[in-house]
Image (cartoon, rainbow, N blue to C red; front, side, top):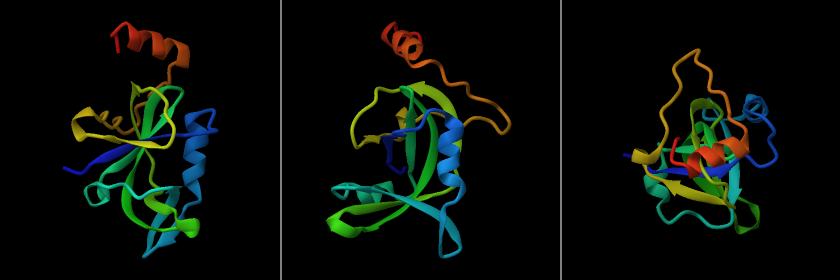
Length: 135
């Protein structure tokens, strides 16, 4: 089972805006890819290929994109190559954090069914429901 990661969709105000980030991804070997950079290469990078980056928006995991690989980026950073295909997931409360965090497969939210919509709860409501153990 591949290992996943979580990352905050910093600056995005809506899920549509996150989808817009991926709409004009580059190409690598015929496959559309985008990349994000990080200061250090994950120690478990080999386990993460085939996993996903789960995006946090308004304190919820809302979408994911497959991790294709890792490469060097300028300035000694590491580029995380991800598919530009963004898949909506069942909105799941998650505290925001800096950088990225590992996410085990057992803790990852399920994909939304094709055509289903996953309304993003207001951040304060999602936080309160999570605190009460209701979501």
